[in-house]
Image (cartoon, rainbow, N blue to C red; front, side):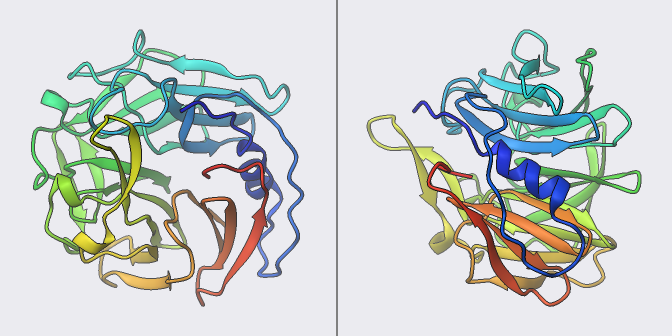
Amino acid sequence: MKRTVVTIALVTAISLAAGTGPTLHAATVTPFATGVYDELYGLTSDIRGLYVTGSTAGFRDFNGNNTDGVVGKIPFATGKLTTLYSKAKYATLSGHVTPFQITTDGAGGLFWADPDAGPSTGSAFISGTIGGAAPTQFFGICCGPAVLPGDGTGFAFWRGELYFSDSTGGRIGTGPSGSSATQIGPTRYTPDFSTESWSQIAVANGKIFIADSAENRGVDSSGRAIVVDVSSATTITSGIRWISVDGSSGFVDLSVGKILHPIGIVAVGKLLYVSAGRAVWQIEQTTGRTTKYATDPRFLDL
């Protein structure tokens, strides 16, 4: 399923021009980088440009296309994509190359979650650089949905610490190193690969904000990639939630029932920006006030 990607323009505008106040401003959508990859899964930025994860072979479906993942950079000055990491240059123990959410430390380091690159397709976290230096798999674990993380998909960096989300069990964790990590808060639903739910995260102001999509990607009986809504099979519903970085707050609903299947999330000042379908939403971090920030018919699946 080939897609021309124009969504980067919107996320760039949000990251750079959103401001820190609660006032809603109309977003001007201008194409910045097109034809990037067939699919985009993660995006982060520093003062130099954007860094993305994706696939060169359409949907990442957990049943195939496990070696077509890529990590690329797009300088603000040119808008031209360069692939930093692919199968030929990737730190993997399983042969799978499936990068999801990516984050940066702002000092030249890149970090991303890969749910299948660890031992025997266990979860892994990998670090590289904005210059494409040899990557390091600094965390890898095997195996099964009950381990932490069973499928790590979300990743964020805040004040020198790395935080992650686990699609199996709806768990949040920190401090991944070697084959150990620390869970933050409780397990939200019974860990199982058949009912896992994708989630990405943003960390700011002492809180980990979670975009619970309540969906996964799978294949139909003909082997075609499809989106699978798993909310009816788990205790999770699509929405935005948060938990304090020390876990003491438990999980708190912030905006639930307003955004269907949120995927991308970024924190800017005291606001959150969340992508879902053909729209980006703005959410106040303290009140949960949710408003549509921008939509465009050119957006196929943010």
